[in-house]
Every structure is written in C-alpha cells, then in structure tokens.
Amino acid sequence: MSSYTDLAPGIHRQRLVVEGYPTFTITDQHIRKYLAELSDVTRMTTLIEPVTHISDRYGWAGWIHWETSGAHFYSWERPISFFSVDIYTCKAFDPADVVAYTRRFFAATEIVAKEF
Image (cartoon, rainbow, N blue to C red):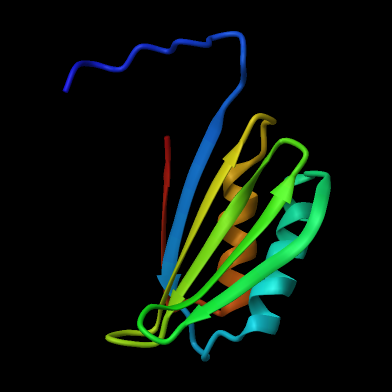
C-alpha cells in the first residue's frame, strides 16, 4: 500500500472511533438516545432520526445521518459486552467531548478512542 495523499485538502474530514465496555446490556432505545444526543455533543444537524437493526448473529447496529456526514454504532453481547462507534464528518468537532459523553452514557469500565 502506498503512503496516504490528501486528494481533497480543501474539504474538512474528521474521523473518530470510540470503543469500550458498557456496564449494562445495550438496547435499541439506548442506541437511538445515544446517537440523538451525540448530534448535540458534536453540534451536528440531524437529517433523519437514528435507525437501528439487530442481527441474531452479530448484535445491534445503529446509524444517524447528519448534514455533514454521520455516525455508526455497533454493540455486541457475546463473546463480550462491547461497543464501537465510528464517526465521520465534514465539520469539526471536539473528540474529547465525544469520548467523555460516551464514557458517561454507557458507564464504560474502559474506553479507547482513535482519530484518523
């Protein structure tokens, strides 16, 4: 793989992945509330309400569409209780605010984040 070259330097793009261990079983209602409130935390304009889906094999997934991109949410109950949030935007946001909000919302025992 070649080194990365920014092909659109005039377009702001920001990515953040946040993962952790929740202290409760995550439900459809949790995902919808989390994503709706994440819009406020990141100051994004919501275009549609959060959408969720459950897979018997993989667990819950959710998505929210923002005017400036969106966020995906995934949670597992097995083999461990775990969540992963993937945010992609064309508008700047504060990653520290997202991590703090996510930690509080899920009462996470451990949380990590990575910006791209």
